[in-house]
Length: 282
Image 1 (cartoon, rainbow, N blue to C red):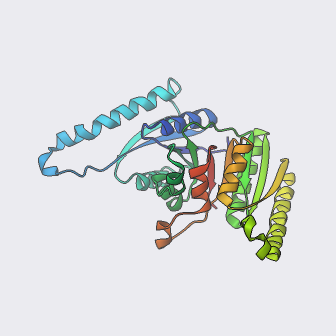
Image 2 (cartoon, rainbow, N blue to C red):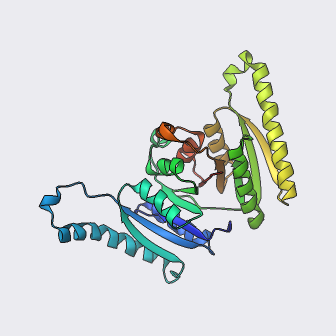
Image 3 (tube, rainbow, N blue to C red):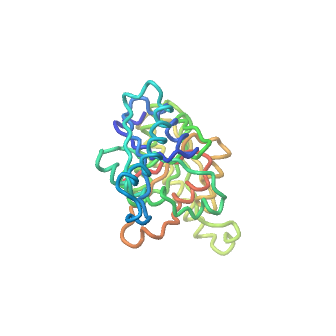
């Protein structure tokens, strides 16, 4: 699916990582899969630990995770490669994806408390802002369904890239594709900003009309909807109500100190969504 020749799956043995690997293995049947096991760097006193003892200390978890991976892929392991690295997890993931020319990074998402998920600051969030690759984040109990794709779009170059990718997947799956555009304005403010809300609503409709034309040219039927409110809340609520199999989003490539301050719509959607979230990089 999606024409991806190489996919990197970050694996740490957690329930969410196990599900992410299983979903990747079953939904990308023609892709080569690189399973990356990132082991934290040893931060103890090296003078108290011999080289061989340190190797054994690190080897234990790696062996366990390697065995777990092999059990998941079973006998059909010819398209799976497993590698363990040591160091900061998000850096190793980003570096390996570049080194191996992987088209997509797949990661699991733990079932954290709602507030914690909205303020992730996690390895996943750091990977999103540092990598140039697309990222697919799979919640612990979620299943990937290419037959029911939800696309959130705002007319930016980033969301246009997400539109192109969503059309690609929807076309191959011959499934449903819905595009939504959220007017970022709370209802209680409508009375004080009627003209602004109306202008934003017209822009959202124009964006969706352009998307529908592009979908028709690609031979994909596209349903559209304008929503009002907080973008992340509206996107995740719509996805849950309509049983979205995957939510597609665009992501701006931040740089410098801005990478420290995440809090983007994409990050919040990932934290709140019950559906897998596909973040497209332009």
